[in-house]
Amino acid sequence: MSKQHLVIFDTTLRDGEQSPGASMTKEEKIRVARQLEKMRVDVIEAGFAAASPGDFEAIQAIAQVIRESTVCSLARANEADIRRSGEAIKPAASGRIHTFIATSPIHMEKKLRMTPDQVVEQAVKSVGWARQFTDDVEFSAEDAGRSDIDFLCRVFEAVIKAGATTINVPDTVGYAIPFQYAENLRRVIERVPNADKVVWSVHCHNDLGLAVANSLAAVLAGARQVECTINGLGERAGNASLEEIVMAVRTRPDIFPVETRIDTTQIVPASKLISQITGYPVQPNKAVVGANAFAHEAGIHQDGVLKHRETYEIMRAQDVGWAQNKLVLGKHSGRNAFKTRLAELGIELGSDEALNAAFARFKELADRKHEIFDEDLHALASDEVVTPEQEHYKLLYSHVCSETGEMPRATVILSVGGDEREAQAVGGGPVDAVFKAIENIVGSGAELLLYSVNAITTGTDAQGEVTTRLAKNKRIVNGNGADTDIVIASARSYTNALNKLHSSLDKVRAQGDI
Ligand code: KIV
Ligand code: ZN
Image 1: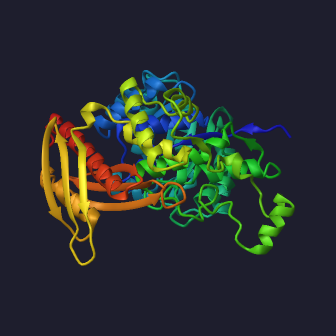
Image 2: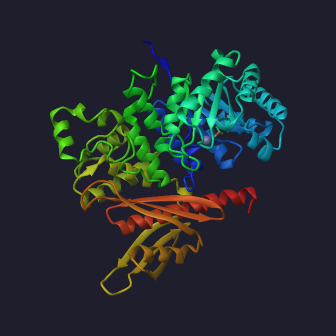
Image 3: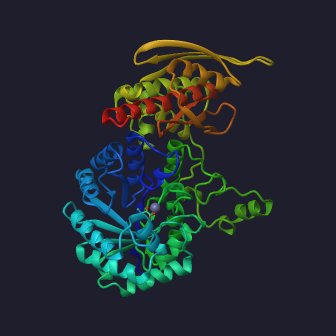
């Protein structure tokens, strides 16, 4: 049976970023977009251009660097939003505008305060405006899962006539049940004139834990685009997870008449990157990308797998990018070997200065930790992907004294815009003391929303990777830091978060919002 192409539309950078606290900087979004391109995602929804100048700039920057995937911007169904999206995707080799309006009775009446006739008119006009910027226009009927089928058919017929090329039927509130969602999609496709001229798409939320099941049922009913996110990130309970959709289709070719072009070996690296940047951990038993997804605990299972892998494994760990921790470099490795390995891992540091700084830290790390793994290099490189203007605060020195029966005491020296400042503090624990000392210097007043530490590899000499989430003036940022000393990793992570807050506050001030 010849397979049809299933378009993988990744919305990690848009719907995924709507998860509380998962906001990313422009540089982080570019890193994610590069990884998605490397994974061969068809469409990258890079953001919502009209949401903020930061979103606009990030979409534009992604459109400038991504060549192998279509870059898409979301837009509400109004002329200003669509123009902003059109401008943001202009540099793209292939650009899409995704415009949406709600079609369910509750959304039209209570939220939009529009009649169904007005919604149809606005949808048609919006597709027309979008077509002035690109031939690749997607229309979404928000809350389609709770919309009337006759009305959906009417809207879809009208927007196809107006030039929409992809029609998305979202289950915005995660209300659908697989057989019913698939049946409704089948009926819509059968009834709408020129249905064969467009790509039918689904976008499912996971409020009932059915996002992947609904998306796959829809594929069997004719959907040829699935909107999904890495690790299932997204609004509320999240979206359908990309890795589960892609691996289900690949593992069950007997069921699905479609195939994707995804390089599945890039799935685990993408999952780790998103988790590290957003500070959202991946649960160990998460399908495909959880740490235990390929671990066999029961003796009877272990025995079976040793005798014949397929007794208990339906996928191969290496096919989704799980590599054995690889010893890659040691303390005698030179700058060239280091640079080559970073390139093999797809890590670009941007400048010779950043490479030199990363190499110096690698040498320091190699002195303290005998075995350096790919994961260590990823963490080390992440710490270096900051431009000088993003490094208003720089950790120069940290000393913590921690002894039984005494409150830990920390001394910290920071460079603040080039000036050296020192402060001391005592705290409930060493990390608390360091954070208080830093705060004594910076005086940010930011609220600490999350602090988490993860060992990057195994062993007591592993680097600890710390995420610190801070909030101030409705801005939420995540800071990361890694080191074999978790107190230093924590100080780095806190300083990194303060730098992000500093640059985002600067941006807001520049627009005169606050
Ligand atoms: O959930 C939803 O309906 C959306 C649309 C904008 C596609 O995210
Ligand atoms: Zn959504």
